[in-house]
Length: 166
Ligand SMILES: O=C([O-])CC(=O)C(=O)O
Image 1 (cartoon, rainbow, N blue to C red):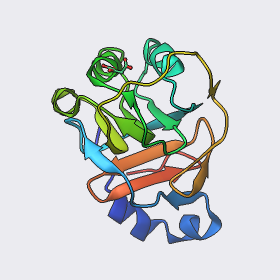
Image 2: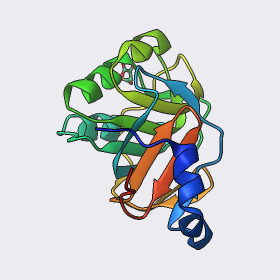
Image 3: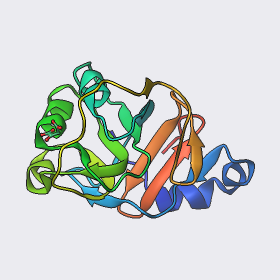
Image 4: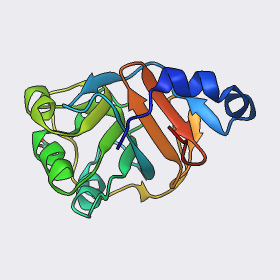
């Protein structure tokens, strides 16, 4: 699949940026994983310092979708590590965008998926199975709904109400 360049997508979709049908996430994410450019329909998850539901979702078939996790921006533990990134790759997820921290950076960077997160943190999260799947989340300064489309590359991250044509 041809990858859509986010800068070009912004230039050619000014009207969508104006209406909010296309939004640019705040540039506060670090780039990890082998895929610097990825896109797909969004699955959302809202959790706080607990990654049981992250694993539950990544154990299901990704089918080219992107898991966007609102981790509340916590800087106190990691929600995704090398095992979960490998699982995401094996299950066919296009990528993970995380408003929170990862760990096992070298392992994640070896995985054939795209990952965006705020930072790395060596400590694991709680395992209490709390959180909400497929709810609207507020990440990177924008409200994101399940089923919207995400486009990420070296320049940034876009969320679109509908699929964009390349
Ligand atoms: O299991 C966890 O809490 C996260 C982790 O370290 C991994 O995915 O390897």
